[in-house]
Length: 465
Image (cartoon, rainbow, N blue to C red; front, side, top):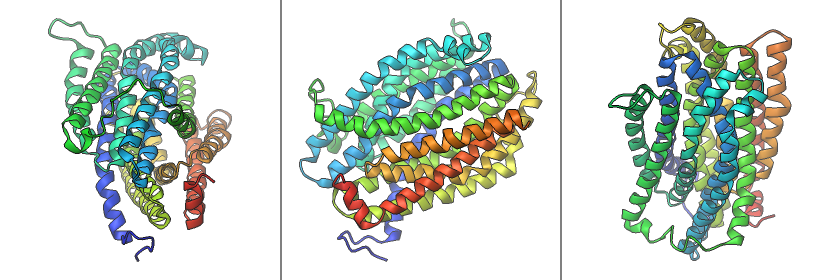
């Protein structure tokens, strides 16, 4: 079936175009996630306490980091629509990138202040003082990688709009190759360096983020087509109009991300009330669920670019088709990952643990139960992510933020706490509540996309109605 808005593409052609853009983004996400999962694997072999502390610290880190990340993500739909319009798009995309970098730089400073005081924040939330102090050591090393990571995300959004995501993939893969020996060296020591433990894990990830940003800048500068944008040219110029647009698009994205990340961070804190084994099991389940989520996240990023390009070019049927195809691809993958998690929860849990460590068997048994629950909500997680990505292509970010807040905080977390502490389900109850919230968010996000995917709705979004 062909559309009739002038591009001549069919559904099959759109699926191929989306996959061609999505697979490097998926691999980039997986490689970036490998930085944190490498930390978990190395620290899990140091001991349950080290893994639990780094998990608590990482949860606070990502919750605090969400505003910066949301502003960075605003670059992708802005660049895509600017390129789709086709009028002076080189200068326009350079302004989009510059404004996003400025906004991220301003947002990083208060986040740094908060992260520097990780221990008192975690203690105020009821965490064990020893774990909180260890988590602070980890975060104080990790936080220096935040600005380069924000800049990397901005540049990745620019490359997505250009439909040239390979450069980000190449430097991310190089980052993994660097992170493994850095973790081994900095965590365990050697060559005259003392063992740094959790501090070494945080420092390794921060150094890799610096390396990936510098590598991406070099690859862009060496590419004849990309270097014409001169992305850092006249970087000092203040652009209030573009900054306002970054804030208008990025803050709701940041809000939605903050709500989602914070609900999982709060779940980790609630796990802390149930003991170190519960925190460690939760860490394993979150790592695996996040790993599978990287695929629909990459498809969502492709959807943002594809929908944004079509919307900027005033091709509403093409934008509708791009979003529908992306949602179908994300749902298909997550249905497959659900089957894998349900079938192999136990063996997967043991990948993160050393049987010789105290509490390993108990942690593995609980992690397997939580992975089974994660398998149940895989489909919902994929659908909500890709639908949100398609909506970002329309620069529609406010309503998705409200949907996320309602689903996660009004429904998901209260149900989880009720099941865990009032009804006696324990750690499994918290995850069942999170699953309930995810299913609700997925249904509402999909309904929002389907309503706006009518030709009139997409046209209205492009015109700012």
